[in-house]
Every structure is written in structure tokens, then in C-alpha cells.
Length: 305
Image (cartoon, rainbow, N blue to C red; front, side):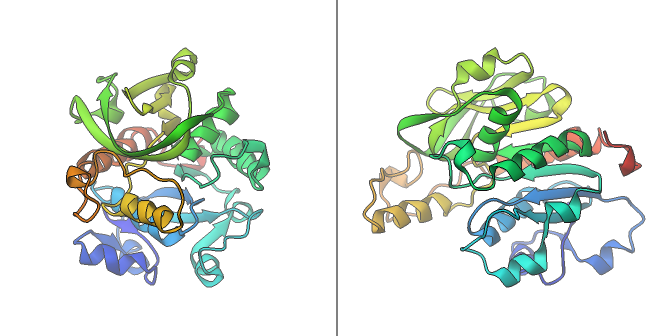
């Protein structure tokens, strides 16, 4: 997929060096197609890492995607420079008067707090309400998925006895749904979280369909009818070294942290981690963009409702 991004976004050179097709503004305006308009509400602290991961994940279809990054106004980011945010990010107020084909709401490192205690919770609720009538399909990741399930359906998260940390096996449970088209029966996805949403509560919600889950990690994929809202409890977009970096970050701080499951060969943290989820990550984002954004969104973007 040619992803349209600003010419000087730092992720552009990294993606091109990985042989991933990205397109700058000049080339995009000379193609006679309507690109899909996608917002990424990036709630992660180190925003450049998440930008790269999500752009890489959306790079494998022939669709042209025009990506716009959104930041929260009611929270000051301390891990990303203000110059980067001012140059590449817009606020909700700057974007809310437009219609959008798709939206991604990322995770955030606030899962151990009650939702209402998060300083930008009210703004996030406003954005999630707005997305129901102004975005064709919204894709929620990890804490973003927990927040969406709580806000839209009243399903709360619960604290785990120990951090769920590693790469876990999942089973497809609704193979006829296009979101899991091309998936193997069993596949692996990373998780890194201290909380979970009880599987039985998700199954009991009539508005939700569960598409994949794990005996250890619980529900991974759920969606509303026709894919208006998609909820992904793990981190399929993670790079090979993301869990390693999290592990050594906490270990070096003296925090209690177990070695991530099913990640380092023989649980030896001096070895190169196994990358065993990339193809299913690419498949997931490709299916979402094709079947639940491109196939559903009107050609006249103003007709989205």
C-alpha cells in the first residue's frame, strides 16, 4: 500500500530502507484516486515508535492511505518533543469538522488507573462519541480497546495478579468474518498489560462478536456489527524488539518483571527474539482497511454517517 505521509516525517526514511512503499505529498496529488483518510490518535508516550509500527502494519495493500496524526489537547506529552508534535500532529478541534474513512486509537500506559482518573478521559470520550458518526470504522488497540469497551458498552477492565507479558497463542473463533480472512487456525500475538477485560463479559455483550481468543490471554479480537468498531486487546503492531526493550527497561529500574513468554529462544534474554506474529499483523490491518474501511466507506466522504 502506498502510505501518504509528510515528506520529512522521520519514519519515512526508515520505512523506505525496509523496502516499504511510502508516498510523499507531491506524488500523491498526481494520482487520480481518492485515498483513504485515516486518523491515528496516538496516545503512546514515545510517539515516533508507534508511528513507525502502525505505518509499517498498514503497508501491504494496493490502497492509497492518507494518514493524519492526532494528539490529545488535555495532556502534555513529555516523551516526544513539542517540535515533532507541532509539526506532525493535529488536535481534535482541528480535525472534528471533517469526515474520515478510518481511525486508530492506540494503547496508553495508564491501564492501572481507573478510566475516570486519566487526565484526558473526558476528551477521549468526546472523540469516541464523535467517531460513531464521523468515521466509517474505528480500530482500538490494547488500552484503547479497553477504553472503548468501557465507554460504549460499560464493560470494565480488571487488574491481573501478574503482568500478561509475552507472545501468546490465539485461536480463530469465527472464521467466516473477513477480519480474520487468511489467518491460520492458531497464531501468535504479543501482549503487555497489567489488566484484562473478562472474556465472559465480552461474550455476553450482544453487540459484540468475538473473532479470536487465547486460553492464557483472553479475547484478542472483537467487533461490532459490520465492523463499525474493532477492538484488539494485544499489540500485533509491535516490532521484534519492543518486548525486549520493555523487559530491560523495567529490569534495569529494579521493577518486578518476568521474562516475556514465548519470546526469547530458550528464555535466554541474550538471544535474538523470535518474530512470529508479523504476517498476521499485516493480514489483520490489510483486512480491516480493505473489508471494513474501503469496501464500506462511500466515495463521497461527506456521506459517512
